[in-house]
Every structure is written in structure tokens, then in C-alpha cells.
Image (tube, rainbow, N blue to C red; front, side):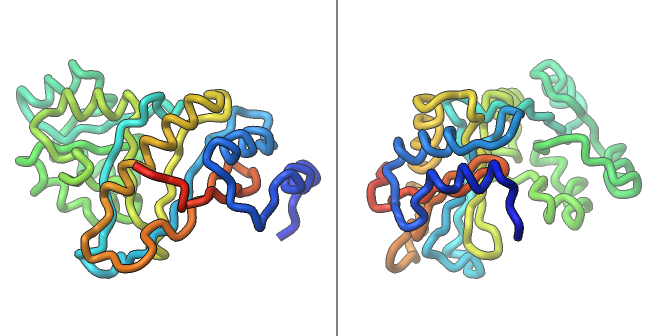
Length: 231
């Protein structure tokens, strides 16, 4: 894959064989951001688990202290008083059965996170095939299936992110924007890593944190020393 001149120049600043301390890695990803816009800083965490086994799944949610820098659009599946509560709490979209054809037939995905009250999961389940692959299916582990819709919406708007393994046992999540500066990015990163470490399945054998890489949108990856990351 041919890379642009800006990327090549930025990549020269990163020693690919080096495992950096988190603070140094965060400084480097900011220096090597090559975009004109305010790039997102992402963490890619490879875990020593086998996600094909139910007892080795790693999934959850965590509120980043400084948010992600992104405006998150929240859809809530709810009826009656809970629908009114969701609107009052700042949900961008609220509905029930009426949302099924809109999502299924019109291919509408104008939201980033979906929340549902437990009584709506029968309805939402019919959307599993389309919401599941996009990572948009409400899930109790992520706190997105709940009667407390106000708390769920507030947390999401404040910077709550969901983390989960992909098919290659890697977690990909945003930890903020380049403009946040080192201190805020470091606090967000530490909060994320603490949550991932606490979510370690009991069935895990051997090294849990296999590799941790920080990168920006279109920037080179910087490897963080997993041995120096703690709760």
C-alpha cells in the first residue's frame, strides 16, 4: 500500500521495534497526526483470549472522563412514560415498532448508539440481523438495555464507549481527539485500560494484554508497552 509523503515523514518519528511508555506514545501520536482536521486518537488492544468461547468474551462499557470529542446521536426504543423520559433526557430519536420498517426497509442508521427498555427487546430482537453486524444492538452488559433511560443517555452523551472483541480478538476504540492534549488523552486511555483489565475473563491463560497500539486517523501506529499498563 502506497502511503503519502506526510505519512512517510510522520512514520520516521516512530521506532517500530520500540515499546513506548503510555505517556510517550500519546505524545508521539499527537506529533504524527497528519490530517488537517482534528483527528481521533484510537486504541487497538489485542488480547490473549479466544472470543469464540463464551467464557472468554470481553465486552463492556466505560465512561471516558473527557469524552470522545464526538457528538453521539442516541436512539431509544421505549413506549409511554419511558419514551417521554428519554426525550426529556436528550435522546435524539425515540420510538417503538414504528422504527422497525424505517431501519429494515429504508436502511436508516442515523444514530450512533441504541438504547432499549427491557420490555422492548422483543421488538428490537427483530432487528438483530441488521443492528448486530453494525455493533448497534442494545446489550445489558453495555448498559444499553435498562429501565433507567435517563442515566443511559447521560452516560453516552458524557463519553461512554462500548468495547468488544472483533473476530481477531482485538478491541478497537476511540480515546479522544488530538486537540485534547496529552493529559486528557492519558486519563481517557488509563480509564479504558483499567476497564479492559478488570474485564479479564477467569478462563484466560497466559498473557492477557498481547499488544496495545495507539494511532490517529490516517497516522502511523505507536506500540505501547503492555507490561507497564496497570489498573
